Image (cartoon, rainbow, N blue to C red; front, side, top):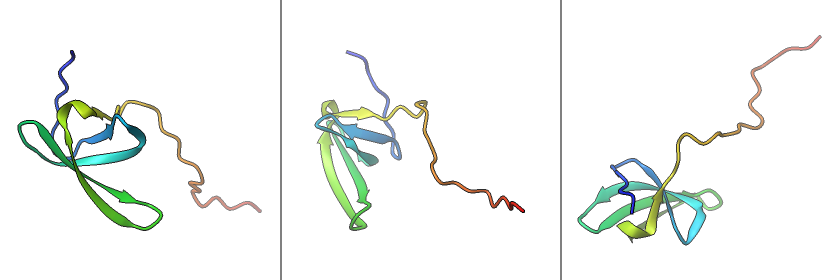
Length: 75
């Protein structure tokens, strides 16, 4: 089993739901305390997970920004 280094501020997924990105706030011996912000309600959720139930978000994966206009003027 591959050991993953985690630190406060890292983004993680819970293995049961890869649609929600959690941010690590605190790490204990066998638990990770995380929070996430729900976009729809702007509600902050806090949850604790076991270390084996989370997976670190791969920051090297490509991302797409849609609708980023740089203010071009067309005449």
